[in-house]
Image (cartoon, rainbow, N blue to C red; front, side, top):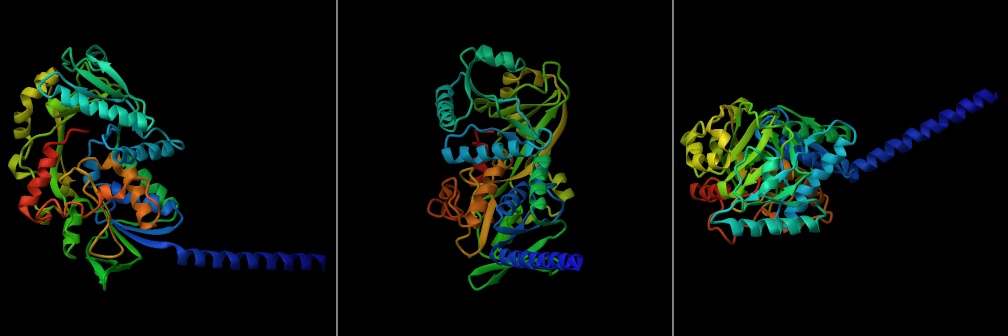
Length: 445
């Protein structure tokens, strides 16, 4: 009899335990916000990670192709922290913080070679130096490690760079670069382990409206996905989807591109990256080759409606005005070889041409839509999406969950251009030219 009694008590205990557990899960399910994310690039995956790990959201992420295999995989992925605005600095700092968090349980994700921002002697020396002083002060306010280098110290670190004697550099030893696909995968795995539902091969053709609210999305196979919030994080393709519902995203698809040389004797994988605004160029080691990019003025921009829709099409896409980047190289060639003489004899092994979404002020579009309740946007990263990914994921999570934001969200508001630009419309050719100018004039990495 004592054994039967004990067995009965165990049965009652476990029965009540499972009942309470079931009720707990049901109650949690009712209080959690169901968030549908459209787009499985690094921004969508970062947002999924921050939302799902908050414990206050159930994420369903829908990607048309494969995760992080479109524009994310094309990025040069410079993780630089020199910023003139505190909010922008905090955004990239969050990415560095979460990378260190990921690295606690695995091998290094990021190669921390450092980055040198160089004010080179010339007509713009004093203005460039003023910008670097601002960056230095901002870095101190954020607790960053940065130090000034004279010309000889720059040459010691980068012997292949031609540095004028009067030049000065601001060195961030903890900056570096990462494989964007690898970083995106860490966001993905973190979201998945926390319970997010992530789907590939689901192409969204429209948003679902109910009164003044967006209540879900519909796929090209007429599958409906219903949620409390919809977040558009589909890169340049977000513009077409949003425009169907009278949401005009202030950004345009612009070319971002870079080259990689063959192996060069003076180069080492451990050398620092360099950003030289006066020459409109940036460099970073790629194994024993040199990866470099230029800020050219070629008219390489595309109507969002003409964007390729397959991942192979994305990687095969070339801008008609300068299909292989030769005009961009020719435009900047004298400045390139004056800054980096080894380029005169180096062989170009690879040319990577990608698509970035640029806004008129080179800042992303983040936050709620003004036209619809429950619709949020994460887009327009202007060539810095990898570096900003952690900050963007955190900010969107805080906004969607109606929490206090860690930065001034109005700086990135979707409608911030409405009072400054007459026609904010990504389908308008004149507006797209405004966005192109932002890329041409970009100074940071």
